[in-house]
Length: 199
Ligand SMILES: [Fe+2]
Image 1 (cartoon, rainbow, N blue to C red):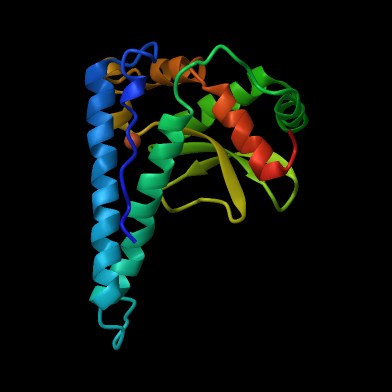
Image 2: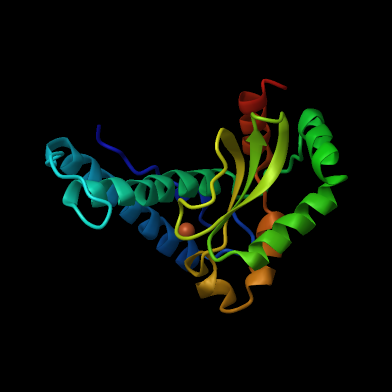
């Protein structure tokens, strides 16, 4: 299948604290992941499966890099999709889940900030289908190491330097604090409802 990049231009000028330059650079970077996902997908169709190898083999390497391009694509779509305050807040059910997991919304945000300070990449809030709760998930090493199995992402926070460096330089914590004030809660509520089955 061919993967098409989604258009997030509607965010330009709508996310407090993120400039047009910053967002456009980020969109371009995201489109690069979609391009690589298509390239890997195309090469996998005809790759020789006859001599797979842990150290090196063309097919093996395509499979090893596939999660980077795949998650680089999907996690950016989730991040852009939950970016931009929409004037709403967490739903009653999501509030209950946040309180059950973290105590309150401020504690959730404090934990997200602590995860962001510990990470060089992605911090996610997920619906954990294994234990029926939400949790925060720090993704390590590119986009693919550390993702928890059978968890559905309901909120994605990009803390790679490219996400904020134009606007914040080294003030990562300021960027994180700003973005946590600019959550599109409708998107997060919808994802939570879809993943958990709770409206
Ligand atoms: Fe990014």
